[in-house]
Image (cartoon, rainbow, N blue to C red):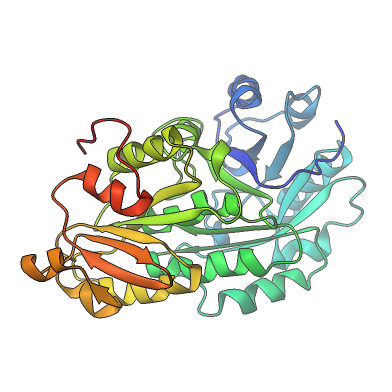
Length: 345
């Protein structure tokens, strides 16, 4: 199979128990996504030549060590040998940690993803760390951290917007979900990772490929979309689905994504941070409806009467806070159109 040249791919990360399960999963991935990641460190038994022979879709081979959040229990020598074998077998990509790149040797036609992962926090200087990885001489840069609230995802998306080489940039955790969805807006994005099914995530915050396609309308995501944030303490999948299907029904180039802000988080600072990405509006859940006003440019009379804000929309380059009674009113504020169906979430 030739080396993949595409960008903005949907990838499914697999952690099967053995070769037979992996082969079955690859057959499914070939029908629902563009590329599969095989996490060898999660497998109890594997036959790599059998796995990669006549594979039905492109593959990323990963064997994550314990030091970067993986589960590989063998020696470093044996782990590197698995990556080298994958290259010898002609796999499309291998994911190699920054401190291992110089041990890989000849790459053949395989592309090397130089990666770094932090399961505790976001890198303090995300762009600086990306540049460090880029300098390592791989074909793709992969940088992953863990977000505690939505505003920590802004540097991830800014890095994707500015990257000049294929990049995988992810914030893990529930609060990192925007990076897994909005990555598909950017031409530098090589891929975004999903789980094959709900409950099958191999990393915190992975949504299922079904939800990426259905709830977030992955095939419609592209550059210069209008982005709306559903700002609250947790992800509300059904509300996101309703708005995104509404956008599709009226052919609006728009997407609604969850922006997780903990109950004790600062919604005003979150809205201020996302100005760098030109978010076009917000739906605000309690307990963030009162504090957010200080981050806005204007207040609609409805917000003044209510004494709080649950809807934000753009008026030119200004953000206006309002109070709405129904999701349909929110939809109309954002799009200038009536909701195409009854909205109940």
